[in-house]
Structures are given as C-alpha cells and as structure tokens.
Image: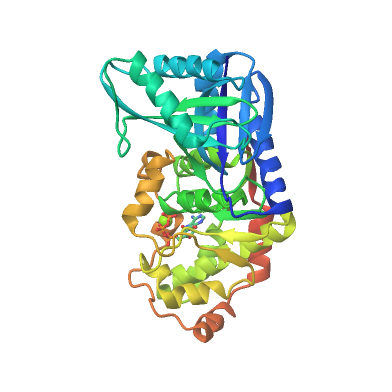
Length: 388
Ligand code: ATP
Ligand code: MG
C-alpha cells in the first residue's frame, strides 16, 4: 500500500488540446511547488493527477504546498492499492486510522468507477464496503445525507481510498493566459486583484508608485511585503518601484488642484503602459472598485481608461468591500495591507476631488505637462526588484 496525493483538475469544460496543455502546465507547477521535496513520480489518470513521494512523511508538507497552486479543485491524501477487494479493505482501515476517527462516527461510502470493467457496480461497491466498515467498527453508523466522514473509493488503474478532501484554489495554471502588470499600491484591493487575475492563469508583475521622500521607506517595504505575499501564489515576479514625485509636482504646479487625482492616475497608467510595452506585458490590472473613492466614479474610470489603449483588468469592480477583505484575509495579505503607512495619493490628495471629470477638460489641462518626458524619466529611474 502506498500513500499518494490525488489532485482533481479544474475547468472540466476544457476540451481536447486545451485540456492537455492545461494538465501539462499544471503538472509543471505542481513539480515546481515541490522542488525541495523528493518526488517519486507524478502521473495522470483520467481527470486526475497523482503525486507519489519518495517518503510518505512528506505528504502533509507537500499538500500544503500544492494547495497554493492554481488550477486545482480538490486535493486528498489517498491510500493506494492494487485492484483487489481485500487490499481495498486494508486501505479503508489505514485511512480510518490515519483520520483519527473517534469511536462513534457516521460515514458514507462514495464509490466512483473510472474503470468500467471492474466486476462490481458503484452501488455494489458501496454496499460491500459499507458492510465492511459496519462490521469492523462498533460505533460506525451510515448517514447518506451528512456523513461526518465521507469515505471515497476511486477505482482506476489502482484503487484509491481517501476520507474527505480539501478544496484547492481553482482557476487556471499560472502562465497559461499571458502576462499582466498589476498597479500595486499598499492598500487592500490591489493585492487581491493581482491574486484574482493570477488565478485565471495570468503571470503577474507589479508596478508601485511612490513619492519618496514624502512617502516613507517603510511604505515601500510594505508594498514589497505585499508583493512577496502575492508571489507565494504567482511565483517569481518583477516589481518596478517608480518615483512619481516629479510628475505629481508638475501636475500640482500646472493644473487645477481638484484634478490632481485623476491626472496623477492617468500618468500612472502611461508609466505602466510604457513598462508593459518594454517588457511585453499583455494587460494592466488594478484594484479599482466602482464608487469606492473619487478616482473610481464611473466618469473618472472612463477618463482614466482613455490615458492608454492597453487592456485593463479591474477584477474587483463589482465586489463589496467585505468580499475583498475576506479574500485578502484568506490569502494572508490583510494584516500587511492594514499597516498604516502613507500612500503617495494621500499626500497629494485634493481637498475637493473632481468626481465628474470630462475628457476634453482633462486633455486641456494635460497640454501644460511635458507628458512624454515625464513618463520616460519615471520609467528610466524605476527601481527593478526581483522577487522569487
Ligand atoms: P488599494 O486598496 O489597492 O490601494 P484603493 O481602494 O485605495 O485601492 P485607489 O487608491 O483609488 O483605491 O486606487 C485604485 C487602484 O489604483 C489601486 O487598486 C491600484 O491598482 C492603483 N493604485 C493606486 N495608487 C497606487 C500606487 N501608489 N501604486 C500603484 N498602484 C496604485
Ligand atoms: Mg489605495
């Protein structure tokens, strides 16, 4: 009997070649997540991927790692035996003993028969093993609706027995959907936005704008910490740290104060666009959320959109704040996002931001700025930090 990790693959609607690419990309990511754990083999069997380690003691650690890989729906620790009823009974006993089940418990056998040539049908398998558990465990009772312990018996090339299963993150394997550049502030929203798009298979890089020395080094450290947290899911990323003090000053000196936020945000978009063109990133990602702040009224978003012709993803646009906070917490970012360091926009924030900007008016204001020069200088002076 061997213990193996079984991984249910997501996006079951994928067909043919797409599905194969998806599975191969996923296997690659799983292997990478396990670099420092000795793996015996990783193999596919209809709709599932199995990982066999050299040492069973590493399984908990391996499951914890694999859980952060996008593209996985369920993960379980399985007890694998050859296709034989007696061996499967041993596997059930091993699974029950590993699950630390107390004396009285309710269970249900959930058979699945990928191997259609197996002599027993699924109901017969359920009956056979249900009887086996009842006979061997005095406190066992069947509960078909809400069993405390669902015992899965999966009949394939081998028989796999497992109790319960953990939810994976879902989504698509990293890198199967191009490359994006997230505008990463120190707030709650943008790390969540990065996570959401990464989950759709986009490889993530980040740009952060600061106005040092008006913003502190600690504020920058906070953003790098957030990038590191996001990279636990996305893998290595490049962070561009860009000082926009000169840009914000030029705006403050030449334009109406009320338009500061919108003009600054349009410049951020242009800098992000330039970085993307130089590095072949396919899309920008922001943590914008409709109506949350001045720069996120529908009119503001429209005017900000027009600053570049890049594809811009705003995955949080329709979320309630609580939903965003919940995701932030679940990915381990909330505590860091809540640290109280100043963002560059707080310092240059106008007292009465324009909530209804018109594009013509903003374009007129921008005539007073040497946009190309400002953007080029900001990009050239960007600090490039690699996180791996
Ligand atoms: P967040 O919680 O992500 O800071 P927010 O609710 O504070 O977002 P805004 O400050 O309006 O909203 O920012 C909207 C989006 O613009 C952010 O989610 C982020 O993508 C981008 N952004 C804002 N400030 C910066 C910055 N200093 N550096 C990089 N991106 C920024
Ligand atoms: Mg913010």
